Amino acid sequence: MLPCGTFNQDYGRDTAVIRTRLQWIITILALVVLLTFPLYGDHYLIGLINKMSITIVAVLGLQLMMGYCGLISFGQVAFVAIGAFTSAILTATYGWPFWLALPVSGIVAGLVGIVGGTPALRIKGFYLALATLAIHYIVTWLILHLKITGGVVGLHAPPPTAFGFAFDTDETMYYIIVPVMLLMTYFAKNLARSRIGRAFVAIRDNDLAASVMGVSLFRYKLVAFFIGCFFAGIAGSLFAHWMMFVHVEQFPLADAVFYIGMLIVGGLGTIVGVFFGTVFISLLIEAVTFASPTLTGWFPALGIAPAAALGASAFGVIIVLFLIFEPRGLAHRWAIFKASYRLFPFAY
Image (cartoon, rainbow, N blue to C red; front, side, top):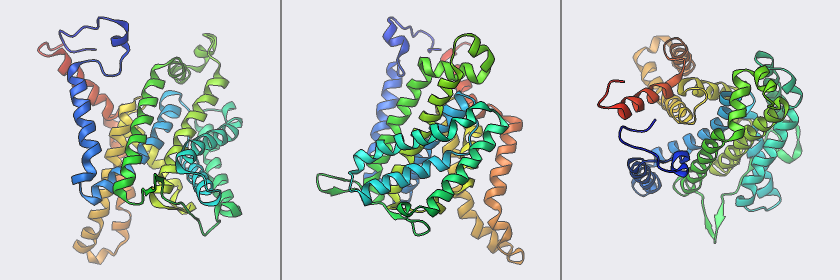
């Protein structure tokens, strides 16, 4: 829906992601602010944006699998770990440049996702979720017991370099992480509008009807697994070289639950919902981190147990409230706001 008085006059404009002059102005201003932020921004905020951007890439992949294709997965963190260790091994052990290791890490995670996901594609729903849970434990076990991954010691991941310049700080890595996140978002947005994206939605809504219409369930589910895991691998590679160290304990199963919570809060089946959910949950985690010591100071008799459980409790309460009062997530509220703006001055 376009604002009142705005019309598409050709097919190219009708299919464009950014259509109106106001949308172009807002987009350009947002990009200028985002890309110049390290010049004047706080060090803590830059690190937080780096972390959220990497998480957005991983959750975008989960959104394409779960939100668009209906494949429930608890294994996204495992594929992030595969991407991280692949990139660290290629750069630290074999001397590959980061710029080549980045896409290869995504492809390796995608191929492992196909291998691990193929048997699981014969099942769906709750059973598929349990199968992906098993993938997480298998990957974790392999990382701990293979020599090439460093086992319990972990691996050093060298910082990316270009023309002799090393991206070894939060400020410099910002200029790699944020552009990659924007590119992956653009790719995901266009993929969701393509024939593949429409096939994903058809499978999610009714796989039997999709099969009758000629949609190959097996083929498109494999494509969804590969793309979702590819995104996870890219996120893992960025994470490894941002932290400059990878260890299996950096990829706990709890993060998989947080990823699904981000989709619930943001809204399933929308790209913008990934941003809403990731930012909301990330800020919630940061707020809990700051509030926990204060809570312990206010109630010293209770000890540190309530403060330690505050994060999980707040996350659980938020998920329950969203499931009861806003099951379509923040993206639904954003859609209502946009419709009101575009219909103004009419009520409907």
